[in-house]
Image (cartoon, rainbow, N blue to C red; front, side, top):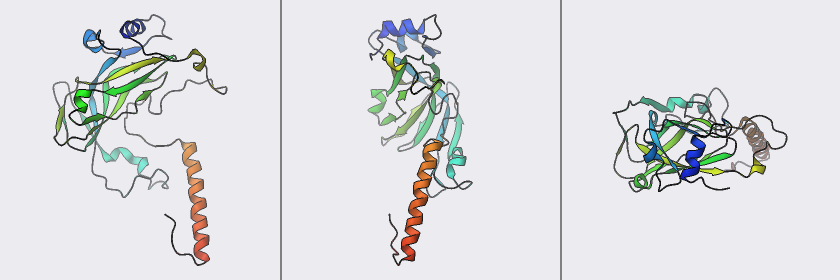
Length: 233
């Protein structure tokens, strides 16, 4: 596995074969976003934001029974905000904001990417704590989890360079589907334009965890009938 340098990035962006082509668009300033001194592509802040609000529930528990499970209607905990180019959004200390990249991304089968926040923002306390691995075959805008860990509010503007993508080639042996898989494997939240998750674990994992939880509750109830009253934490 190797990192694509500038010349290879440009080759992939202009590749005629759709199966090998890397898409990062629009590139508003190509020479600035893929400069000769870097081996990455700068991405900019989009116009759609989700601002986390004070929770009016006790706890986010994906194993809670429906319809009381807060993950069923998790978007209600976020304020939707559209900020046009020329406008700005203020991220207050310790506030969490979900955002999209301005660019649409599409990765071919033999490439993956890492999302890295800009050090200049990091020195101000702004962390782009995205799920940094972007898998092959991903397509859509990237979701960024932005958190202000500093002590001063920061003003962000759509179109502002917010992070950079480093692209890696994959070992050819890893390009074939595993264990007989034939479908294209894409990220959990691709290609949805909604950045707010509707679950943390897969349905299969959640189902298994519920089995373990129910068995534990059953064992605790049995202990209570035998005279043990202290609940296990």
